[in-house]
Length: 211
Image (cartoon, rainbow, N blue to C red; front, top):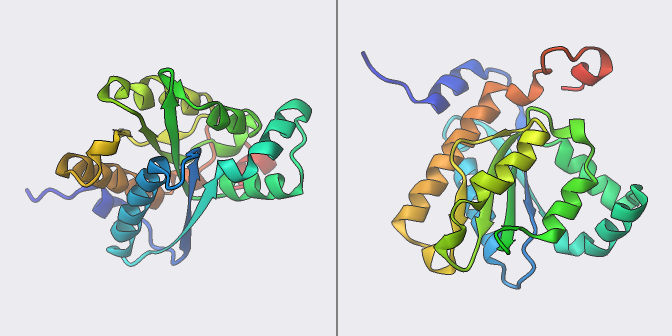
C-alpha cells in the first residue's frame, strides 16, 4: 500500500483557501544573530513546504531585543504598553510560532523567559510551535527538549516532535539542514491540520469560539 506523508494528509483535509500567518519570536541579541538565523532558516523551509501544497504564507519576525525595555517594565507592572501589547496580540493570533533563544547557563535567556512571563496563559493553547536554540557547544543539545518544551507544555501549546539546537559550526551542514526540514514539515502538518483553530476539550463560549 502506498504510504502518504503527514503533510500530504493534512493538506487534503485543509480545503479552505486562506493565508497562514507564522511568527518568529527570537531572543537573539547579537548582530548578526545566529539565533535569528536559525529561526529564519526554519521559517523559509515551512514556507516552501506550505507553498508546495498551494498555501499562502506570511512570516513576521519579532526581535525581542527591540522590546527589551518594555518587556522589563511589563514584567513589573503586568500591563504591556501599546507597542508591546500590539506585538503580543500578533504573536498569540498567529497560526504557528517558531521560537528561538540563545542558551545561557543551560537554559533559555532571561529576555526569552521574561517575554513569555507576560503572555497570558491561555492565549497560545493548541499553538503549533518549533523550538529552536543556539549555543556555544553540543553540551546544550538537550535544552530545547528538556527546558523549552516544558515551558510550552505549561501553555498547552503543541511543539513539533523535532526541536533544534545549533552551534555556530552547525550552520550549512547537512545534519542541521535535515533537522530543519523535518521540523518544518512537522509544523506544516500541524498548521494544515487546523489544530490551532480547534477549541480544547471542556472549553466553550467565547474562549473556545475565538478560533
